[in-house]
Amino acid sequence: MRRLAVVLALFALQPALADSNLPPAYWSNRQLPDSNQEAKAQALMAELRCLVCQGQSIADSDAELAGDMRDLVRRRIAAGEQPAAIRAWLVQRYGTWISYKPTAEPAAWPLWLAPLALLALGAWIIRRRIKLKVGA
Amino acid sequence: MSRAVRFAPLVLLLLVVGALVWRLATPPDTRVHSKLEGKPIPVFVLAAALPTKPTVSSNELATGKPRLLNIFASWCIPCISEVKVLQQLKGAGVAIDGIAIRDRQDDIAAFLARNGDPYQRIGSDPQSELQIALGSSGVPESFIVDGRGIVRYQHIGPIEQSDIPMIMSKLEQAR
Image 1: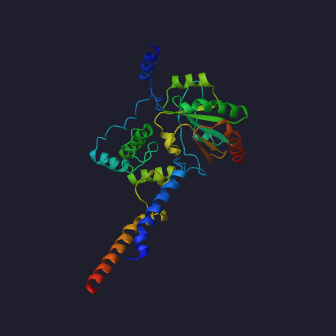
Image 2: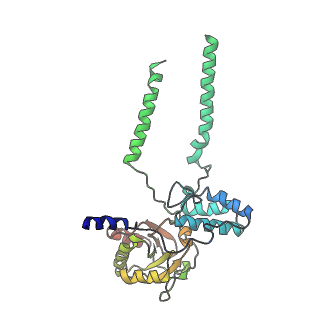
Image 3: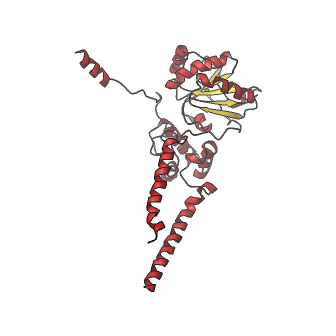
C-alpha cells in the first residue's frame, strides 16, 4: 500500500519550472497588422539566435526570452526601424553570435571560399580524368 | 592507385574521430558574454519593482563608486542561494542594485522576505527589455558598473561563496 502511494506521488511531481508567472509579451505571439512589416519581422526573427535554446532561432523557440525578443523586433519594425539596424543593435550587445546571417569578417572567409575551392578541386579532378581517357 | 591515395580515407576518418574526441573532452563554452564590458551602460529608466524601494536608472549608477547590478527574479531557483552571498557582499560594504526580470510586486516582496534583501534599489523589467539591452542571456547575472557608468565585468550565473574574493577584487579594480 505504501509503495503504491509512493508511485502515485511520483506521478504528481512537477518539474521545477524556470519560467516566470507573467504572460508572454504582447507582440511575442501576435502578428503585426501590416503584412509588409510582419514579413520583415519574420525574416529577421528567423535569423536571430535564441539565447536560451542555442541553435534555434527566436522565431522557433518557446523560451520566454525569445518571446521578449520577438516582441522587441516587432515593436521596432512597427516603429519604422530597419531590420539591419535592429540586427546591428543586438550584435553590439551579444556579438555576431546572435545573428545566423554570415558576415564578411575574416573568421567567415573559409565559409565563402569553400564553394570556390571545392569547385576548383572538382574541375581539376574532371580535367585529370578526361586527360587519362584521351591518353588511353 | 598510389599507396598514399589508398590510405587517404582512413587518415580522413582518423582526423574526424580525433576532432570529435577532442570536442567531447573539452566542450566549448556555451555562455554568451555581453559585449558591453568596457563600454558605458545603456541609458535606461525602470519602473520601481516595490513601492517601498527606489528604482534603478542608468544615471544613478555613475555615482563615483562602483556598484553591483544584479539581475534576478523571484521565480529563479539559483537566485535563492545567490541572495545569501549578496547579503555577505552587502555586509562588506558593496552597493547592490537589483533588476527583477518578468516579476510581480507581491512575488518579489515574498522572495525578499523569505531569503533576505541585499538591494538598495530594485527596478522592474517585465519584458526583459533592459536584460536584452545589457547583452544578458539569463538569470541570475551580475554586472559591475564603475563610478563613471562603465560596465567593467559581467558575471554569468549565480555569484557563489567562492566567488566573493574575485568579486571584491573586481570591485576594487573598478574604483
